[in-house]
Every structure is written in structure tokens, then in C-alpha cells.
Length: 414
Length: 82
View (tube, one colour):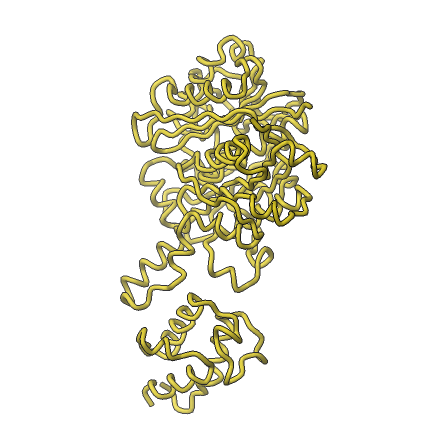
């Protein structure tokens, strides 16, 4: 099978527009969370989120294209452009025909779903905009990126809630290692900081309501956590077969070596007891990478700051990694403590961060972990980033519907 | 509808905003699709904008007949309440 390497990263997150901007902020333990400005949230129980600040769609596409897309697609297009620039690739015609665009999105253009529903209700059937469908449907992040960058390979959207883009990266990895493509742009995007988005997750009591201290609201594994913090953003990675990357002399960030996926088949939102489904996804990813548990030095956990989810993931990790985790040789952190939860975009962004960990030799912290939940006993890299040279990292993403994805990233060695 | 409303100017303003084109290219005989770069979706959205601005309804059949800037001006002049 082909080896698959990561040769470009583009991130657009609440912590910065740009990969280096995001990485610097996350390693510094800065929170990207703040009061909601994208809509009037004054009547909602949660009034803060992780917004991508200072983002102007016009900087990334012709003005005429802006209204064709929901914000999630704007963010995706920005991340895709940053990624291709980072990869410093000059695409040949052959590359363009092969390069797929797999961009996972959990929901899609909620802002337009709402707006056009009102139009239909208030003004009647003949006033529904022809841009309603294109601005809302989730695969138009991938579609618009493909059009803008002229990438003509396989294109679709994995939608599996908060593991959407982890699936996208995993599937793109599969496309390359099976030899069906030598180059794939994979990633995720989400922009649901809207009335429907915040209202919907609030109704499930999924969001933190720590309105007086937004930057301290995302606190995975802390005793006083009270839900996740919704964020928006996008992340893309360029994956190439090692052969293709070598041929063009690409700079290699790291290698994708394992992909595991499972379903709890238990409950729509609650994780299965002992994180049984998550364990199987992690185990599958390790087997895929042909690694023993003690070869993983760092896990970028799903770690959303929810009551049950944090406990079950910690238990799943402890159960699978055993003494390696108990003896704190395995470090686990949640970058969601700084960035909030990018939902469908989380998997790709966090997988990219887990790759940067290998390259930079620094592990981002879990912030706001003031009083560690006694039921969560791992080394969560509390408070400050730590230096460590690692060979293998793991990135976990779980979603509503009981879906679980685990990816293994490895330092590239010839 | 206010007396003496400059329909041509207003139509051009809407076209400029919707299609993001230069004012100088919005000539009377310019076609929306070939000359002004609208696609089929953009054209429908443009007609919706005319409907909203001039408080009229343009049927799907009539939409198909509106191909140029002048077609739009003529249609709107004929169909707005004087």
C-alpha cells in the first residue's frame, strides 16, 4: 500500500486565520472564545462562542461568489487556499484530475436555512432564492473549493456530526493508500454560530452557560465543566502519496499511519459506557498503524468539556493504554479548551495540530483545568504547553449518533 | 410608486450590486448572461431583486423573456403602477 504524507496545512480558527497564527495561540494556551457578535444572542442562555475574528470573505474570493456560499464554505475556501499555499505545490493537469476534495461538514449553512425559511413563510413560494440550496447544502464546501482551485478528483462531504472531518481525512487517506489517487485535499468546515445553532444545542443542554467568564467556559476534565463551547472554523490538509510528494520535493510534515472508526450503537448523544465504541476506534487505528499502545506519546482528545463525554473518553483511554497512561507516559490534551468545539471542522483541525506536535516537538496544553475531575485520571498537560519529541500521536473525534474516529499520525521516517 | 422614479438608474444600480459588474458595462443592449456574466441562478436572483425593489411579481414565463438590461427596464416600466 502507498504511504500517505501530510504536505500542507491551512487553518482558520477562533485562535487565528492561518496555521502559524492558530498554532502559536494554542501553544500559548490562549482562549479564542468571546461574546457572540455574529448575531444578537442576548436572549439565548449561552451568549458566547468561538468566532473566527476579522474574517472577510471578499479577501478570499470574488465578490460575486460570496453570496453563493454559506459562511462554512467561505471558511473552507480560505483554509483550502492557505493549505495549498503552504504546500507550495504547482499542480499539473494530471494532479488536478486526481486531486480529490473531501471536506466534512456537520450541519451546513444554518444562517441561510433560517433566513430562507422566513422568506418562504412571510413572502410566499415564488420568493425563495435560487441560492438557498447552494448556500445550505453541506457538500458545497468541497464543491466550491474544487471549483475555485480547479481540483477535479473525487469530491464529497462526510457528515457525521463532530467527527465529520476526521472521517474526511481518514477516507482521503484510504483513497491514496489504495492507489486510487496520489493527492487529496481533505478537511472540514463549520459555521453554526447562528440563532438556530446556538438555540438547538442549548435546548439539548449541551453548551456551557458560563456567560460571565467565556474564556474559562471550555474546561475539559475539570470538576466544574458545564458543557461545550461552540466554535466555527475550517481546516484543510494536503495528503499525498509518498511517491508523489518525493517526486516534487515536498516538505513533509508527517505521515498518516492509522485510521479507525466505529459506532457505539447505543444512544444519539450519550457515549456508551466505558467509552466502548471509542476504545474500538482507537484500537483499530493502532492496529492499522501497526503500533502498540505504548508507542503513542500524545492524544489530542475529543475532550469537549461535557459531563459524561469527558469521563467516558478518559476511561476509554485508560482502559486501552493501561500502565502507559497510568504512569503518565501518555500525554492527553484537549485543544478545545482554547479553541472551543469546531464541530464538523474539529477533526481536521485537531488532526493538523496533532501533526504539528510531531514537527514542533511541543504539546499544547489543556487550559482551565483547575480542579481535575477525580474520575478522569490521565496526564492532561494542564495549564502550559510542554516540550517533547514524539514519534506518534493520535487524534480522537466523536459525534452524535455514537460515531467515533481515531487517526494516528507519525513522524516521517524514510 | 413615486412620480418620476428613474427606473433605468435603479435597474442599473441593482444589476451592479447583484452581478458585481462595472457601471460602464451595463449598457441597454447588454445581455445578462453573455455580456454581464450572470449564470442561470444569478439571473433568477436578479429578478427577485427587481421584484422586491419595484414591488412587482414577475412570472417564470416573463423571467425567461428578460434577457437584456433594456428588457428589464421595459418590463418594469410597463408593470409598475403609475
